Figure 1 (cartoon, rainbow, N blue to C red):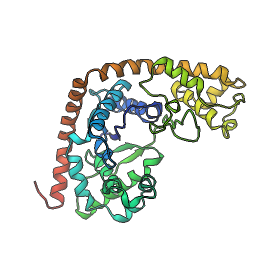
Figure 2: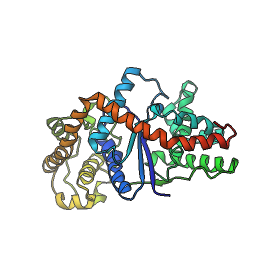
Figure 3: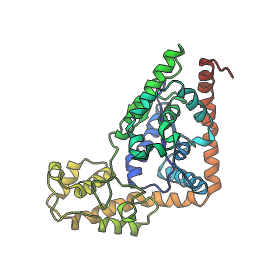
Figure 4: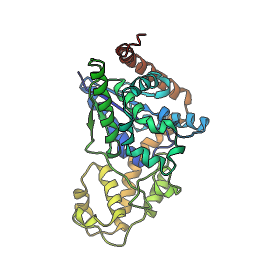
Amino acid sequence: MSKRIVSGIQPTGNLHLGNYLGAIRNWVRMQDEVAAEGGDCFFFLADLHAITVHNDPAELAANVRSMAAALLAAGIDPAKAVMFNQARVPAHAELTWLLSGTARIGWLNRMTQFKDKAGKNREGASVGLYTYPVLMAADVLLYRATHVPVGDDQKQHLELARDVAAKFNTDFDVELFPLPDPIIPPTAARIMSLRDGTAKMSKSDPSDMSRINLTDDSDTVAAKVRKAKTDPDPLPADPAGLAERPEARNLVGIYAALADRTVEQVLGDFAGQGFGAFKPALAELLVETLRPIKARLDQFAGDPAELDRLLDVGATRARAEAAPTLDSAYRAVGLSR
C-alpha cells in the first residue's frame, strides 16, 4: 500500500508563526514528497472537533474560510493534496459512532488532554470533549492512513487510534484498518510566546505582541521582534548556554527553523553578539519569509467563493475515498447498507 498521510487542524481563526513552523510548513513538504512517490495526503479543517466547546456559528464558519485561506497561502496545493473540512464529509461522524462501540471507557479515561482541557469542571464539559479522541481515530482510519504527523501532545491519541483499529479488526475478523504509524517531522519547531519563553505561542494569549500572525504586515512583524522579551547577555557559542534563557532560546530557535539551519549553526554566526544585532537579522528573515504568504493570504481571503469551491472539490474527493471504508465498517458490524 502506498503511503497515505492524514492530518487535521482546528479552524480557530488566523494562523500564527507557531502553527506555520510547527505543522503547516511540514504539511507542504510532505504533500510534495508523497505526491512524488505516488501516495496521498489528506489535510482537513477539524470543524467537528471545534464544536466540542461552544462556538459562535457565524464565527466558526468564518474561521473555516480563513483557515483554508491560510493553508493555501502557506503552500497547500489542492492538486497534490486533498484539503477539506470535516463537516462536509458525514462519514467522519458516522464512523465515529461505529468505533464508539469498540473504544473503551478505560482508554478514554487515560487521555490526558481531556483532563487538561476540562480542568476542574469535568462534570460541566461536553460529551464531545470527552469522546473526541474517538473522532480523531475515525478521522485517521476512515482514509486507511498509513502515517499521521504528530506532536508530543498527540502521541497518546494516535496510540488510541491504533488500539481501536486493532480491536475492531480482531472483534469482527476483518483486515479493514491499517495501524497508522506516527511521523514526527524532524523540522517541526516548537515556537514559544514572544513575551514568555516558557509558554507556547497561542492565539488565546490576550497580548497580540506575544505572537506573529500570518496576517501581520512587515512593519508589524518587525516591531514585534524588536519588542520581544530578551535578556541582557550576549548569545553563547554553544546551545547549552541557552538552557536557562527561554526567551533567547526561543528567538534563536525561530531563526534556525526559518533558515533551515541548526541552533548550533545559528549560534556559530551570532556568538558573542547581543540582541541589538540578532533581532534585526531575525526580523529581516521573518519579513522575507512571511511577505509572500501574507500576499497570497490577502488574495484568497478576498475571494470567499473560490475558497468554498476549493473546499467543495476537496470534500467531494474525500467523500469518494471514505465511502468504501465506511461501507465495509457497516458490513463488518452487521449493519449492511
